[in-house]
Image (tube, rainbow, N blue to C red):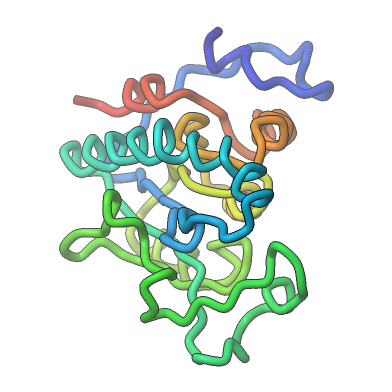
Length: 223
């Protein structure tokens, strides 16, 4: 199924197919969100390890290899490659947003220099590639990313990363509200479950972004 007809919610079931996407390199950036060591660490509790096993497998078999390919393609074609990661500036996390201080899954204390807050080694930033630090779900809301993109003349943002229903969704919505054209690469993203992943993509597709596959995204870029 083509990206033009996939991941349609009730709102867009009968909408006409969108126009072809053409991404000019000088106007396009790749943003890789929150693929950090902390999320790939093994769980101590066997029940939790079993619960998270499908996510871990998708990350290792699909998301990380595909994102590595997407990064290398963008680098080779002159597309600005950027990263966003959850990382607080104070060791005790006083600078975190409220959502990261509440108990539960979203509680995160990731000081910026600690190893578990770093981007996974397979996708490590190179040279002068920009790395945004954030203590919010949205990479745009919690940083100066908006200003950076505008200053560099970026109009289109390709998004990859985790979690589809949390930081990806928040970042995509914020970008769309600021009138950036957004492409989300489905097989470079993951949520805790495939069901959450798919449902969120259906919700954001065609209004906040276009959801595509890796091969399709690569095809939007000029050689």
